[in-house]
Image (cartoon, rainbow, N blue to C red; front, side, top):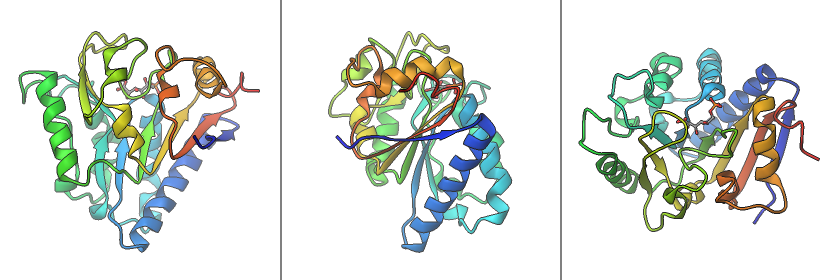
Length: 242
Ligand SMILES: O=C(O)[C@H](O)[C@@H](O)[C@H](O)[C@H](O)COP(=O)(O)O
């Protein structure tokens, strides 16, 4: 297990600016290599701020947005038009402001498109297998105060899902209750996993995630441990780190 890198920032605005700058640089570098980078987006408030900052910086970057493939680390199993959809917010904050190729934006099926979250997870897994198997250039992840990442919540069966890319989640402690999430196996296929955490409310979860000891059951963020891992945090979220 390579030690995760922790990048501390004085506040949320500086944090979001640095993540946006680093992500744009990484996408430009991947495209300069001739790659078509896949990016896994996440939901949550700091992710929304990041998406808006990416849209603001996009005109000054050389990223060819039509040659970026977008996925989500998790999604809520609600109707496609629901304000609770991570993909809907990402479109509002970023994807509608850059020249993406619609064929390169892969949403998790919504509850008014398929009957169950299990069907949505199976369809999403099939799409990921069909388009490169999920080795994202970067997967963005938020973290909850309970240490959840994507929709992998403490004590939930999805934590132990094997031989599958995405699974359904029910009874999520964070509403809405029904979701689809990448599994740890899928997350580990990513070339880089970037956690982004801001605020005092995340300090305990961040320190538990990075501590020497502790269980994945209690702090799911601990389940992400292979490959290039960067924790992008502001000082408030890092306030209980050694
Ligand atoms: O669908 C979701 O709810 C998110 O994917 C979830 O994993 C989120 O990233 C964290 O809960 C952090 O959210 P905040 O940044 O809003 O605290």
